Length: 215
Image (cartoon, rainbow, N blue to C red; front, side, top):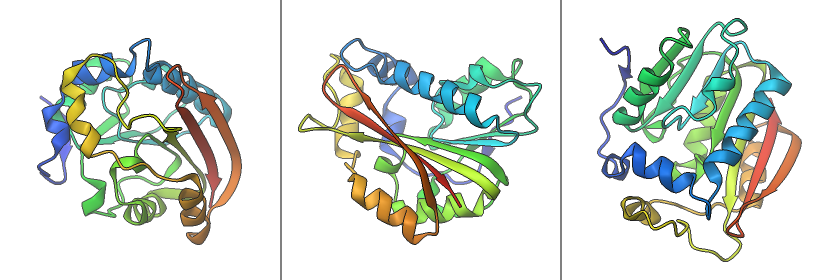
């Protein structure tokens, strides 16, 4: 029996994109985003060694294999697509028994699910309301917890990279490019302190900007 918790039932364009199409697009040689996000997840988990991590937009669980199950108390993953969560559950329920998966539209709630010492939101801010998302993070962040966000800088390229996978093209209208300065100001206004900014180049000329924040 699935242990996925359903918080809200949003009708979302993400339900039109299969996980296979999404992951195959993200890992395509011309895109390279799945591989880079996996490496970044591994890197930041190693640096911070969280006990109660929270993953926003967990999709198929990319990077969860880098969690040491002997070190964590609770692991929470949130996504808007229930089919993605079901596949994540299949992949990790035996390896990571602490994993709790929640179907939730962050635009529609600021509910507290966990007091997390590590919130990871990679390519998530582009698809949600920034102000409400930060409120959500604040309500789910433990004292002295860290928030790590990765945004995509298109550098003049299209929002959704060309990979030949037709199924992901519907997301181009959903993706909202978010400016670095807007992110910096929003988190500063919410009382966060920027600790680190990392820049990574992608094969197609795009850039990932990753920010580490403390509250």
